[in-house]
Length: 166
Image (tube, rainbow, N blue to C red; front, side, top):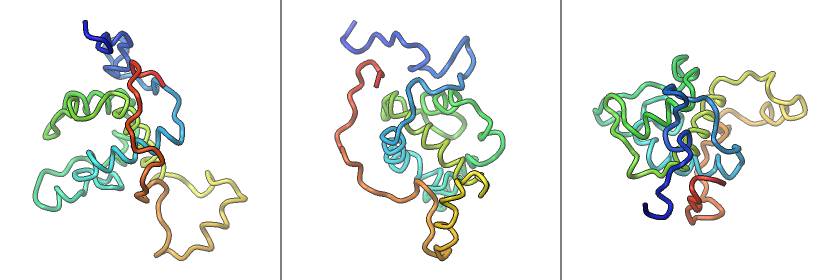
């Protein structure tokens, strides 16, 4: 067996627990994880799913089949293992991305998808009271959804796989 190919953490490499999609991240979600997920999402996912995750990306605008929005109830309620499985094995018109996107990056993308879902479904009451004034003072045309700004990551080298452990 080649070094780094043991894949002894079944959940990390499949997203499945007892044959069903699991619903927990295999490592803590940090700012770095979300930043990496946003970067990878914008490269691999946004051409079809769009930067907002509404399924209206550039490829779709050019006539390709539209994927479902991440903001529909079925996908907002789907376990995170479902997204991992779809990225790994493909589903419907979506091809698999197992050879293009390493497992840790797939999990980072999933964390970012959850952030996108929250950004479109959050109530004002979820924002701390001391922060709400910041939104009220910004004109609508200059406001931007959290996580949609494209900024270069602080560290552009890919994270070490280390068997998928942070």
